Amino acid sequence: QVTSQQLELWLAAFLLPLIRMLAFITTAPIFGHMSVPARAKVGLAFIATIAIAPTLPQPAYTLASGEGVQLIIEQFLIGVAMGFSLQLVIASIQLAGELIGVQLGFNFAGFFDPQTASQGTPIGAWLGLLALLIFLSINGHLLVLDALADSFRTLPLTPDAVRLTDWRKLALLGGELFRIGLYVALPVLGAMLVCNITLGLLARVAPQLNVLAIGFPVTLLVGFTILLASLPFILQFIESALGRGIAMSILK
Image (cartoon, helix red, strand yellow):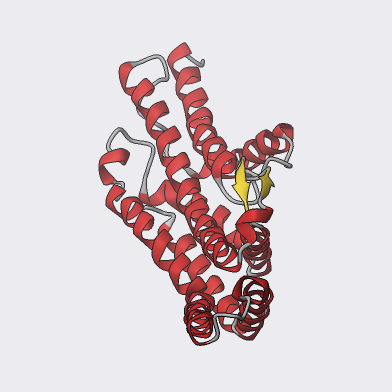
């Protein structure tokens, strides 16, 4: 015989991992993109939960209890935090592109980026797309699913999961955002600084020279040349940054 409490516990054993899966897939890179249909996100979370739920220990509380409501909120927060930590790495690469675009004068050619729902520059959108392609090339979409499955071991379905979560690591990722963005944009920013100083000296030495007319083409030429020359190093740095982001997404 099966009691109603056993049915509620079985339902909790499936719905609690599903909530964490849905929260993660909705906010993670690639999976949470606006172009991915909502049905595909729900279907992926449903299939992943069917594969993982039988291997997890059964929760000790039903969803209708006070501890069950706490568990629902905890699973949602953990899933969102894990997906958001990965989005921070992609956002840091886009931040580097925005810094480069502003220095090259592309802020006058801004456009609406549907992925971030904000104004952006072509360089920022290009570097963000490049980061997503590198993410796929290193099988990041599979690694994050493996990290999500491993999170049920490090952060089990208990009311103490939020207390065990290292929220300080998520806060430190905010500093990583600016550090990674600055490192990626540093070669072009340094070249632009030297170029602007040179143009300023030319304007002082030869006042009759129209610096505004020649400054923009020279800035574009120098900026794109340095960006092309430093691209192999930028790709390696982006790959390592994505690897660190995946490792830190477990929040443990």
